[in-house]
Length: 342
Image 1 (tube, rainbow, N blue to C red):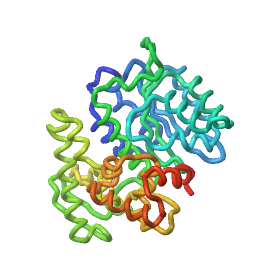
Image 2: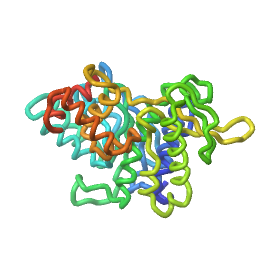
Image 3: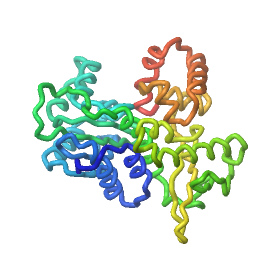
């Protein structure tokens, strides 16, 4: 559990490791998070928000039964309108009680404010990172404090590489989207390129067949393989930055082991699936949707696998089309629509 050293890339590898049984997959994600144990183990659970808020599966690595049950009870008590805000994706490891109290202030005077405040009291002290799409399905990876004493329930996450762990959220979200597909293989209908671990392109089709896409996919494979080498030990943050969750906002690269034991890398179509905003192009929608969730330029660039300049220019175009002059106005206009999926 806590004996493992912190390694954010272990979490990325666990997220993309194909396991058809969701319970076992979540257990693997929680086990990979063991190096970040702060006294109460680790929990990973998936949440679906429909007519009610429902915890689908829970992965456990050393957490107490009382903490696990308290988190599940608190989650399932949230009205859907509140849950979609609670489980909107984050780009950092945050204190859960603090997040709920911020939402209580945002909904001040309403029934949602009361539910958020009640949740902050009911949930055990823990830190969490949230991934996925609140209008569809979210994943929460959390680290209960356990029995450690504290002067404040709102302390920041104590690990020095919390920023690197925050980047894991982009990969958890990408992996969660991929789990809606069948077992990954080179002929599953979503695989558009096949590469070797040294970056040799063996096959490309569809959008991946263009010269620009082929170059980007090769570069992404080389970068992710470097990240999984010595760099992951010597500079975890640099390694995480080298392995983006998407390439050109379109593909996630995952491992595949062939029957002869050969390891190949598959570029699978895995868009963000932003919704609404029909006046925007798909690329502009993705950037605007992620910005409306409160993500920074740098995090959006990391999540989509685009240069920072590309993200900035697409967001500027989107804001012009939406007739907003600042990110504050964008958040005001699209923030609720983003979490509600409209």
